[in-house]
Length: 199
View 1 (tube, helix red, strand yellow):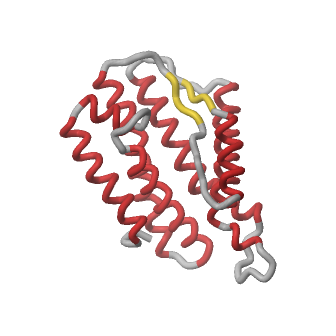
View 2: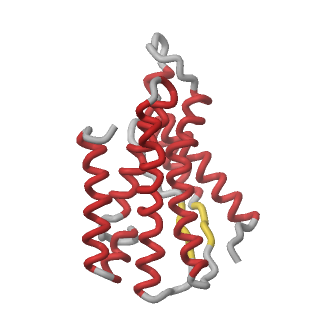
């Protein structure tokens, strides 16, 4: 049954809030300085990042969870509270190290593991398509669109790196052709965001 228990809901909420604060401190830190040309307050910046970065991380993890459950496995997200604190403090000094936690489930076959892993980056690609039209609007809506596109492109590309515990490694172990096709899409989007071809 697809359900979220109270402890898991608490962990998801904590990760969402901490990452929203961390990204707000990273992306909008100049807006809080005296004499800033923008009128962004910290609460407003946190709200913008909750809609963009927070949703990107949240739905990425839930995609892993629900895919594992579809295969019949119990699965739950567990936050790493030490890493959440590190994310906020690292953002305060100008960089962000974000590893909010992970979805845990029993051992699966390589195919199931690959599909569960692929669900996360695939969700970020879908979210990128949702946020992209918002970029065409001026003002706050355009800012939300820009951050939504950039963050989801980054998450899709980064998580498809075939190394260690990242999603790409599990996809690589399952199917090289699927990995190559998926990495080509996610890597191109991430490179486009960093090089400025995407907003």
